[in-house]
Image (cartoon, rainbow over all chains, first blue to last red):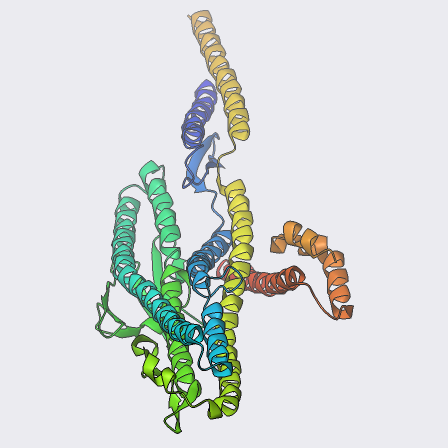
Amino acid sequence: MFGNSLSILYSALLSDRKNLEIRNRNVANVNNPDYVKEEPVLQNLPSPGGVEITDIRRLSDETLQRQVLTSLTYLKGYEERKNLYEVIETYFDDASGSGLGKYIDNFFRSVLQFLRDPTNEGAKESLLSNAQNLITAIKERYQQLTALQNNLKNEIPKVVKKLNTLTQNLAKVNKDIAFLYAKNKTNSNDYKTLLDERDRLLKELSQYVNIEYSFDKIGRVEINIAEPTSTASGYIPLVSYNGGFNQLEFDSNTQKFIDSNGIEWPLEFFKNGKLGAYSGLIRDIETYKSNLDTLATTLRNNAKITLNGSLTQIFNGTSASDLTLNITKSDLDNYDSSNSESDQNTIQGAWDTVRDNYNDLSAKISENYTNYQIKYETERDLNQNLETKYNEKTGVNLDEELAEIMKLQQHYQAVSKMIATSTKLLDYLLSAIR
Amino acid sequence: MGLLYLDKKFTSPFDIDKYRPHIELVLKLAEEKEKFSQEEERLLKKLLYKLERFKEFVDLQKELLQVKFKLEGRL
C-alpha cells in the first residue's frame, strides 16, 4: 500500500517538475515573437495510478496562421506597389506642378501667342524654348520610369536569392524534424524549437510569394508557390516533406524564371507578395512608357503649323525618347501670317488632343496609386488584427504563466510533504513492528 | 456620412457583426447621395474593398475549417 502511494506521489512530482520546465521555457520566451506557447498533455497512469506527461502540446492555430500569412503576402505586395506609385505619381502630379501638364499648356499657349503675333521676337523665342522644355520634360519622365523599371529588374535576382535560401532552410528543417522525431519523439525541446523555426521561415517566405503549404503529422511542411489568379497555370513546388527542394533562377534577358526541373515560369506568373509586386510594377511602368510614346507621337502628328505652304510638324521622332524639335528660328522668321487663323484652329485642336491623352495617363496613375493605397491600408489593419489574435492564442501570457508556476510550486510542496509524511509513517510502522 | 468613423473602426472581418447596422446605413446614404467629395469617394472605395476582402477572408476561413474538420474526421 505504501509502495503504491509513494509511486503515485513520485509520478506527481515528476510531472510537476516537467511541467515547471515547460512553464519556465514559456516565461523565458515571453519576448520572442516566433515562440509558440507550450502546454503539457497529462494522462492518468494505469493501476496503481498516478499521472504522467505524455506529450508537449504546441498551442498553434493553423487556420489563423494561414490567414496571417496570406494577409502578409498581400500586405507586402501592396506596400511595394504603394511605395513605388508614390514615386511615379510625383512625376505626373500636376497639382504640385511636377507633372507634364504645365509644359504642354505652356507650349501650346506660346504657339498660339506666336500665331496671333508672328512678328513678335519674344513669342518666337518663347515657342522654341517651351517646345524644348516639353521635349526635355517628356524625355526626363521616360528616363525616370526606365530607371525605376531597371531598379525593379535588379531587385528580382536578390529576391530569388532570398527565396532560394529560405527554401533550402525549410528543407533542412524538414530533415531535422524527421531526424529528431525518430530519435526522441516526446519531451523534445529541440523539436519544438524546429517547429518555431519552420513557422518563422514560412512567415518570411510569405512576404515574397503567395504560398500554399501543408503540414504532415510530425510537423514537416510541403510548400508550393501558387498563384490562383495568374493566367499562367500550375504551381511551383518548393519544398517536399522528405527534405527535397526546388531552386529558381532568373534570366534577365528573357525575363523568365527557370526552376531546378528546367520548367520556365514567366514573370507574369507572380501576382502577390513582393515578387508579384515587382512583376506587376515592371509591366505597369512598361505601359506608362508606351503611353508616353503615344503622347509623343500624338504631339508630333498633331502639333503643326504651315511653313513654306505646307503643314509642318513642330516635333520629330518616333517615341518619347527620341523626340526632337523639327523647326528653327528661321522657319518662324519666314512664317506666312496669312495661315495664322487656320493654324490657330489646328493648334487648338492639337492642344485638346494632347491634353486628353496626357490627362488619361495622369488619371490612370493617380487611380492606381489610390487603389494601392486603399488596399495597403486595409491589409495593414487586417494584418495587425490577425497578428494580435494569433499572438493572443500562441504567445506567452506572463500573468497566466506565473499563476501556473505558483500553483505548481504549491502542488510540488504539498506532494513533497505528503511523501515526507508517508516516509515517516512507514518508518514509524516499521519501528513498531520491530 | 459616417465613412470616416467606419474607416477608423471597421478594420477586421471579426467586426462585421458589430458594425453591420452602421455599414448598411452608410451604404444607404451613399446610394442616395448624387456626388461625393474626393475624400468621401476614397473612403467609400476603401469600404467597398474592405467588404470584398473580408468576404474573401471569411470564405477562406470556411474552406480551411472544412478541410480541417474532414481531416480530423469531425465532418
